[in-house]
Image (cartoon, rainbow, N blue to C red; front, side, top):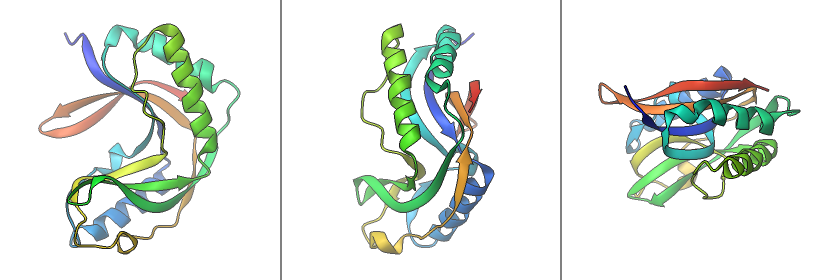
Length: 179
């Protein structure tokens, strides 16, 4: 039985935002060479824990619940695209407007993880949704990537286990907190 796994805590997106992003990503297929993310994997990472003991899932769930206590659903809008890395080998993402409550929640979750002695990646949160990896953007102007307008309400925070199944990246929920 698996004792550790690659874990992260994320805000789940409503279907309306996932569909709008999937439509924008599909239009990119002829424009850029990239490995597009599958729609069901779209999320907003609040804390990346990496390889972690699965026995800690219950404790991490309690950290999430305490941090989210009193926070209701969060209305967000899709914003401009951007990328991390070099243009010839980039991670392409879509930004968010209205995500400040999620940023504050991420800080509270991270403080709770630290207090519990649970390791996590300390890079600052930058609210975004990853659309593609290994994207070659060197031949296209960033403004020409896509424009997508949609808004929706984030109402779930989930602890996910990231695995590879049949060569595909799959995110399995271990704990979910409804806002």
